[in-house]
Length: 103
Ligand code: FES
Image (cartoon, rainbow, N blue to C red; front, side, top):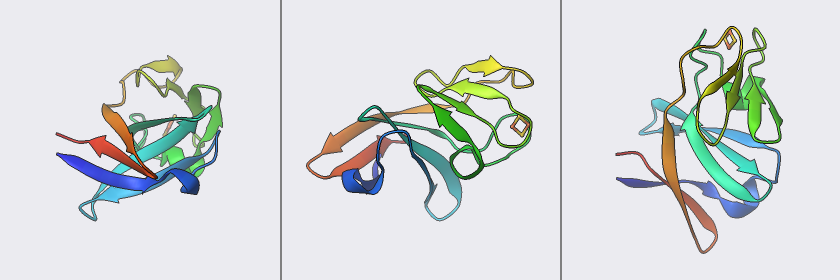
């Protein structure tokens, strides 16, 4: 199922945005050097919002609570204490909108 998550102009490079799918399931939309990615938004270590509390650095996001890190593209943890990957979602940009395939 493809869902619009934001407009292209809403998110500049290096920024992230938390979006609730169906008003309850949080995902994070990232703009990494002009390419959009969507992952789960809740950190797998302690449920911190990566988009709201985290810091984007290149293609990684650092959690604002305990400093764990994830690769935004793969969802794989890259820094302690995180050991469980984030789900990632296929992204499609159509005209001025960003869509995620959330299954
Ligand atoms: Fe993200 Fe602990 S909640 S590293």
